[in-house]
Image (cartoon, rainbow, N blue to C red; front, top):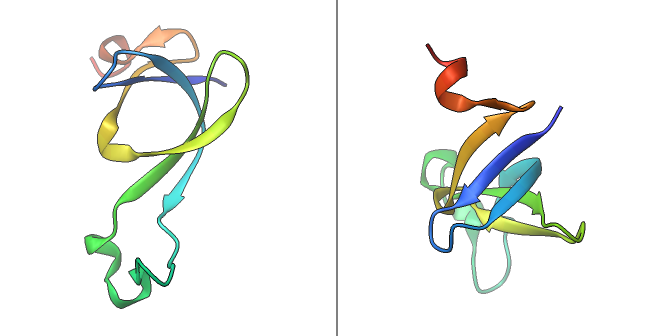
Length: 74
C-alpha cells in the first residue's frame, strides 16, 4: 500500500511511511502540551528513499494505492 502526499509549499511528492507527534527536547518541551496542542509529524521518503520528518500541516494526501483521493471519497 502506498500513500502519496504533496508538499503544499514546493509541490514535491513524497511517500508516507509513518506518522506521530513531535518528541520533547530541552528547547521544545512538548510534554507540557496536550495532544491537541502538539503538531503532528509525518515520516516521508523521497525518490531516493531518504526518510525524514515533515509537519503534517505541510502535506496533502493525493493518492492511495494508485487511486486519487477525490475518487476514493465519492
